[in-house]
Image 1 (tube, one colour):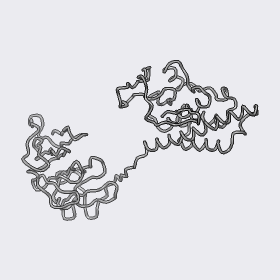
Image 2 (image 1 turned 180 degrees about the vertical axis):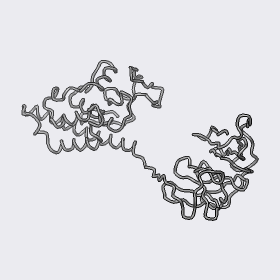
Image 3 (image 1 turned 90 degrees about the vertical axis):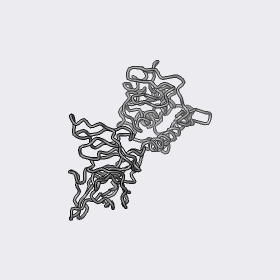
Length: 362
């Protein structure tokens, strides 16, 4: 953000216009960003030093209260004509921001209303908890100052000087209200995201018993984005089927066509499931239906499916890992089983990006 002082008052320019003419110098705890690096790397301090908050200078985690500090520095300079934290080098400026207090405004401008001095001083508190906690809080304070009038807190100097000073103070209040509103909107748009509702308890559906261990169902399979899961459960007659549950709800539904299913796993898009049943690797839509056979798998022990349409699975409890196209075909081995070291390769899964292959060896 840039603030331009014009004949008609202060104007806030677009947040994306300002760009450093030269790379920032490095110093002690500060790591500068170079111009040819458009991405801000972790541990990098980017910004205009005189207006940085203490936590920004120290490379700590920041929130909207860091913007409040920067806004206070702008308001201080607008009112006094000099920066709140000075120095002849970036290191000295950074040290002043972290360790020193700015000179009281009424030392430079004796006619400054005490309430306005207090509002700006609170912006510049070293600790975020001691500042205004939001742009809305600061805007409310400045609005109160503007509506209540400044005369009550102004000493009794010559009338002409007081009027000039009051006009400047009103300009500061107006610019502060506008800046606070824009900072608040920008922070809100950056940080507020829809919350994902997740209920972690898996209740037993009436007449069923979930099976999370053993060779006849297997552990819960969580969808990659964490929004749904699938698990095996048996009814009173011992019939095992898969149950799918959206984690924004409270109940699971039975996936038809999954009789005798074990060790299920998800498709990358979350629309279908793979599972082992009757000596085959099968697929079925999450909504249920008639399953499709992919290939033979006499006693499957885990599988995984990537976005490129490749399935990796262990067809038996003592075997290597095999791959097969998601559309079906003849499986081919992708690992070589050394039975002198382990008796099987099991539970493959594609890690982040669905490209690499960690496996469990037994």
